[in-house]
Length: 217
Image: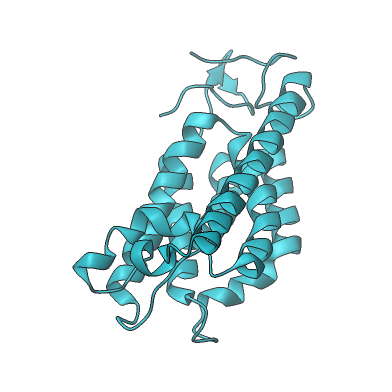
């Protein structure tokens, strides 16, 4: 199905449907944060030690399942607090472009980031946290403006660059307590997702239409 220009196109900047999609995405991302806090509260309150049992332990088979579980775990509430705001903001822009794209992109980011950590990280470490996903969303937004060539995506590109461009230093090995591998491979996963799930420009009336089709490629 392809949406043509009009007030009902949720991917065309300035339409009511566009702002509604952005609002729904924001509410959905805000709902994710209490779920993460609940997991951390249960983990600490019942002393489950989920970080050690469900985090990524690089180069060890028993730590491979952490690829899927680690984004939902954090080293304490301070760690979770620091991830919450960028997760909401960046996730909102990614989710607003479509729920199915968002889910598939997030899965790719988790896999690329997690496997990158597992293959290259220190076997004496345990890696948890949503930072890899955050850097993945950053990679999506920075790449999407280039490949989808729309004013809206370029505006998001500039906004995200101004707000979080400085965090790109996190892809460098500057602090042994921070998994720079997770950040780097998360960013790369976001770039891959943005390319794989880019919205192709349909032809309307013999010329390119700057809007976007609803369907996934």
